[in-house]
Length: 412
Image 1 (cartoon, helix red, strand yellow):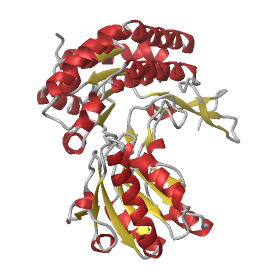
Image 2 (cartoon, helix red, strand yellow):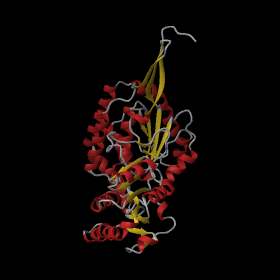
Image 3 (cartoon, one colour):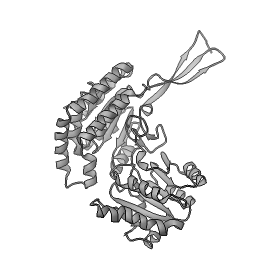
Image 4 (cartoon, one colour):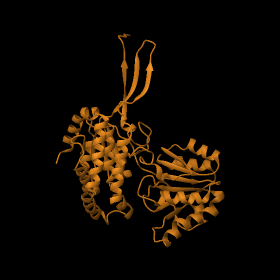
């Protein structure tokens, strides 16, 4: 087993070849990776079953879902790789061209970052997503999975036949290996943590290399006084229950006071009563004092509006106006995704202008904040910061740029 330092050194040495690889060669490698994933899906599923069995009883059922693979999910992983292969190559793209009075031609040109390392926890699909994006964007990639998904990640790497040295897996899942990547000055050009709040906080606080803050999603939905209530219920149920363990799931619901008496009983009926009657897990509603006057649920504590539940739980608060909803989001959001349900254009415009998050929706579910859904093929993660990337990180976010200047003898 290679040490983390050996992996960083070999990744650094692979950068010139990977960055210079032509588009056709990269695309052929990606298509082969996708085919291999499906060909060896049974092997991947067997290793994943061992990961799931080991994790069962130590994490929640929704986190087990996050760890689990199925044939359909492997097919989706392969399709994501093929989507990346079909996207334009970002490397060499001229972002801006300036011709100066002295005849100099200055081209701001996209180039790979170099070595990208990603530390992730329990979602095995990140292995193939990150590998595909690193390769297509001309970067050498280092993948470091968490202990819970270690067998799945290793099996995916074996099955995909990743280009040697270009994309490597750190098999050591100890804290020390993660710290080595965080301290990999001179080797790592960008570190991306993808997982829970603890991992992200550890990386952003300890990294000595450039690090992207990703993922933690306290996502809000605000139901305005003019909202189409049937639409609102559909959106809220999707945003909360379709996959509650992911970062784009809604965690907090804000409801305008003028519709609270009418809407909140419908909400409880849809998320609690109907789901229980259908044999599905009901949503545990954590209610502020005003919401608790209308429906029954858990009393919201001081932390309930600052918690990423990643579970069938949701904070509910009654507000007096769109302005109060915006103020609440500003105070409690992690900058991921927020939505307004409204038929009032002025309120929608105010919300989209004033809410400072990576993705802001009008009359749509927050679950669309995803690289594949945004047409990026797949994603390295979702950046909740503003530099150098924001939102789903696709190919363009994995490049930087340099200025290439063409002259004909000019001197200054």
